[in-house]
Length: 247
Ligand SMILES: O=C(O)COP(=O)(O)O
Image 1 (tube, protein in one colour):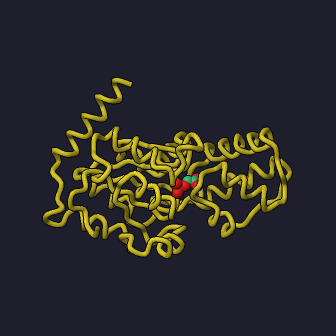
Image 2 (cartoon, rainbow, N blue to C red):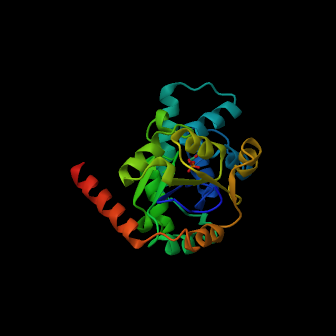
């Protein structure tokens, strides 16, 4: 696919797609490691580990330090990582250029959700600090290992919650797990050029729709033929609200 014809909702990945969060993730990881008396890692190293969630990030750091930590030590590191993230969700990171305009432009056209390997409370904190939370119809974070992309479970949950068929929910992400999760869930996907994992993903899936800029996605949404009525947004919002009331 090369445009938004037939698309009724969009699921965005978070880290590396909406937010350049690597500096904050590095800070939280290093602060947690420091609490445990371990050495820091530089930004490039940490950036390359982002995308599988904090438990995988901590596992990478421990592996690089050559430490075979037990479950308790990992849990303590994770607790510290979460606390440092919540204390400063977006201190040095930033929203990628063009994302605020994209959200403002899409708001009345298509419902938007976030589907991320970050656990939901951390994802909501980052999105809130980024000013993006009010635009979203839902935040689906990986709160268990089984939910982590490339598992299709979060995308399926998002489609159900929105009341759209998977084939009409576009996944927009920067890395291979995003594309693989979309494929497994039966969702179309777009790979952004500005994120962290784009090269590996583009090599693995060369036929993926590539988005050079957020503006490209916005233009696709407002082209004739791809225009979505505000009715879709209103219907989806009221579906979400009634489902939320039932929960
Ligand atoms: O690694 C993370 O913390 C989350 O990554 P994602 O938002 O790219 O899914």
